[in-house]
Amino acid sequence: MDRSAEFRRWKAQCLSKVDLSRKGSVDEDVAEIVQLLNGREQFFTTSSCSGRIILLDESINGFEVKKQNCCWLLVTHKPCIKDDLMVALKNANGDAVLKFEPLVLHVQCRQLEDAQILHSVAIESGFRNSGITVGKRGKTMLAVRSTHGLEVPLSHRGKLMVTEDYIDFLLKIANQKMEENKKRIERFYNCLQQALERQTITKSHPKEKINKKNNSYSHKKKRNLEKAHGKCITEENDKERENDDDTVINATVFPEDY
Image (cartoon, rainbow, N blue to C red):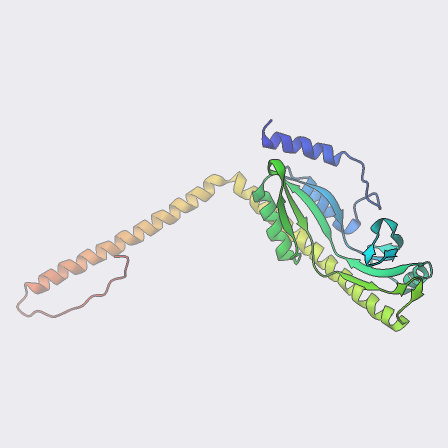
């Protein structure tokens, strides 16, 4: 089985699986990007999160956080409301941590060239922590990530360790990051559309690209011939002056490509 056929089979298998994420569906703000990528033969998404503000109640054993014992007190993919956060904090028995996590998108790509196109789009859109991984049998994945996250502890063993004014301050920052994240997602979608359109045009009209190169070569060749012809005329005039009794010394400077 060739690589393209294998990729199509793998894509069909992955997209037919049940969504096992906590939410069970694709987030609204990233749905268009997921649909656009999955609609192209050279891509498919394996996981995504549009970005979220979460409050976790973490169990601590020494300095190690046991992630399996975390309790999700609050999660929202929209700007967070203070009243909702304060109600959630009352249910914290361990160490409550407020987090903002920006967009995460994992995309399997048919070949490295496809991943490089997406990587350029991600970087251009502001997701500068994105990276490409090439695994076994040439499987290529792009992870779209950003660095503008936030993680702040609020309580210890159920006791609130910060003031409400500080919580107001943190929520303002978290919500600003959420808005910036949404703008980057919109830029990513727009840039992705343009990049895929350019790719389609290039593949659909390869002869035009060749003709443009040939036309460019022809014009350059014509200019060089005209320059060379002008040089010959000048040299002939110089020879005529050398045979003239009233010789005039004339220095002509030509470009280096003569």
